[in-house]
Image (cartoon, one colour):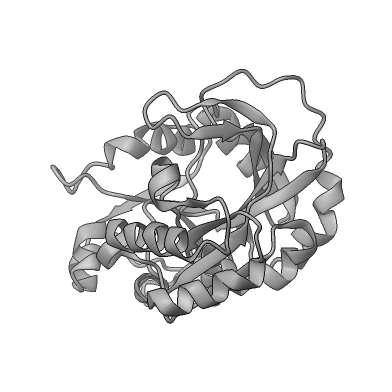
Amino acid sequence: MKIIFCDSVMDNKLVEPDYQSEFDAAKENGFETEIFSYEALEEGSLSNALKYIKSSEDKAMAIYRGWMMPPNMYKQFYDGLLRKNIQLINSPEAYRHCHHLPESYEKIKDKTPKSIWTTDISIANIINLSSKFGDKPIIIKDYVKSEKHKWNEACFIPKASDKDCVERIATKFLELRGKHLNEGIVLRAFVDLKFLTNHSKSNMPLTTEFRAVVFNKNIIGIFNYWDEGVYASENLDINIFRDNINAINSNFFTIDIAKKKDDDWIIMELGDGQVAGLPDNVNRISFYSKLRQIINKNK
């Protein structure tokens, strides 16, 4: 199994510094590592992006670990590697399935906040959709990301029926996302979660959340989502989400789980495991060791 990382902008023969610890951990656990140029791929030069990756004599499986890609960019990456006889663990369809919330919503809707989405990002349409939540609080995000660190300015809407507030928050959100907006708008019911602390920089409220990483339906690990705040001794039984996990059309993904104020657990969102970040608290050596064990077990 190969692990493919982004290269450094300063030196395209070195790994991106933010992934150095993962790169080293992967090598230490016996994975073959490769690097490619994310920037060249983004600019449309596939041959330059993959120039340091040699074609494989035998069919090789690979995992990408790096920056998020729009689905069309991921498909180019996937297809380019296939021509080198290297196949990424998730197909373009599987990548999109977990990367865009609307794609996987049906698989988790029984355990996640009510969500409505649209590709019509006009303010009038957003106001119209928000009315479906009545007077309840909601948050706004795109198909992938929110502006949660601008919580009160561009994320949280206290009352969905307050048209002026919806317009103000949605306008600011669209302004901040700009050309980086992913596909469309998602409105989600706000759920009261168990408070953890306030973010040291943005002051946004942090809540008791965990990130589980899943490979071939096996849990690699369950980690504190936030690196701030003191997590109490929580008894998260991941098996209450086993049916949801088994239904996800992906070989490698993350599932973010949060504790509500009433102590129930809910799914916040999914992510493709290749582009979802590992919290700083995760021991990279142990993570790649467990990944290696699961791969060997499934051979």
